[in-house]
Image (cartoon, rainbow, N blue to C red; front, top):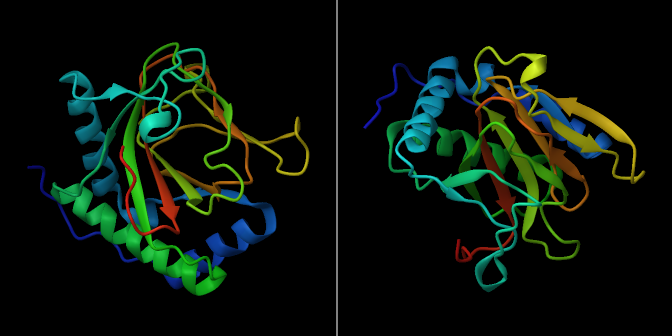
Length: 218
């Protein structure tokens, strides 16, 4: 088991206020998560996903859930592993995510009851075409979060998250490089986005805050 090198800083009220304001005004935002998570935790999460990747413990990702799950490599090519909170870094991360869930509920009255999260690995040439994280009206996935775990990422490495304007179908409103500690949050039903092709191995962590109480089959 990987142990934490030091305690993780607590989520600050100011950080949560800014996050809630960004989601309300634009439907999405990007920020540096290092002050909240701490660099040691980000590095330990990166080490975990790298070990999973090297030991072939990740599985090919699909589109949909349960009986509706399909694996179409023309749509997405990443590999994933769901987090269960069994390691020290995962437990520390879950504590921050739960504080974030509570903070969003307090500020935006979203009724978020739980979250689910997985590691994702994109090898060279992998991508995920434009999509929404939740179908409108489902009231399941409400807020999406992505945390990047890549040191020394360069512009030529590709793999950016391309974010589209929720009010204009073809307008790109953001291009986020997957640099270590960078976090993106957006409203799951409102913000179309895609992962552009990576040119080197790209590690990230995706999380969804949900309004339903019972986990669906993964």
